[in-house]
Image (cartoon, rainbow, N blue to C red; front, side, top):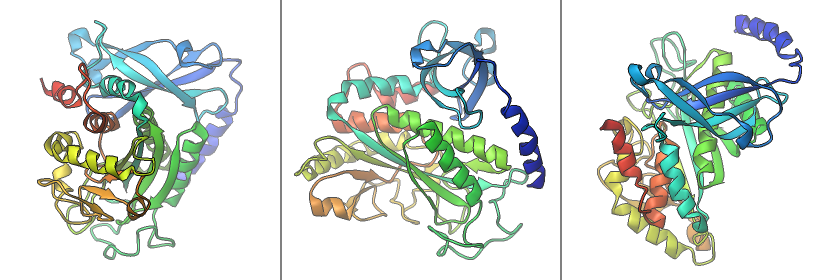
Length: 370
């Protein structure tokens, strides 16, 4: 850690240098495996609107997104945020990936999700995502801070814990929290999770496509912060087999009608619709999710659909406060920590609000494997 601090001190004197009116834009995209990639470019002036950002390209054969004999994939900027690492007028830029024939790259799920969100804009669908993740030692891949070759005491004191031996790497989490706030991410909270070195941050409420955008950018900021601290992040839904909780990305959902008095009727109608598409949703709810959705450790079984009030072992949970007030939101507890939020929010809008003729998130996902 002292070595990392020395490097940070050296870097700081360069970060403080003036840029002579130039701006650095870090272009960020999602690759074929759901990992984040980025590269920087220099712009000649401050950016005030996304339309001022030029399109760019990259070698898709190196990211699994294109063949080597036709490797150019284009980056179309869709949103930008203040850069908490370079600061000043520098920005981080979220982009969509497009092929050179003018079609969206098959791993670009934002495009299809955007159609659904635009079509159902009148529903004012809000999302809140609870992103769980686990910190690992970058050298051996073992859970960060755990005794080598051993295990800490069983689960119990770690959830929302305070104090040495209960909490690991709070410095990483605090740095990430501040970075998100600086960049304008709608981060609504953080907490230590049930397993030591497992944490959660929440993003939302965000409306429509903004939910997927902000979660991906919050993940990017987490990866960058942990890189600086020399810690590895995993979003795997079951990073350690055994009697330890897995990691999810619980998805909270509310339409305008659900948020009005009497909205419980709409919530129940949405749950009924979800029960009829359980299989399609599960296929979009993250890789290796079967390791997590076992019916144990506060999860429902992957094989069956269930719902209940204040039931953390159900597929869909209605908060006790929502039942008491008669309106609000519901929580889908099935999504894994490694979801693509565009797939999850897209199929949720499609199921709850209705399909759109030229948009189908399930078919869009299946297109990856064709």
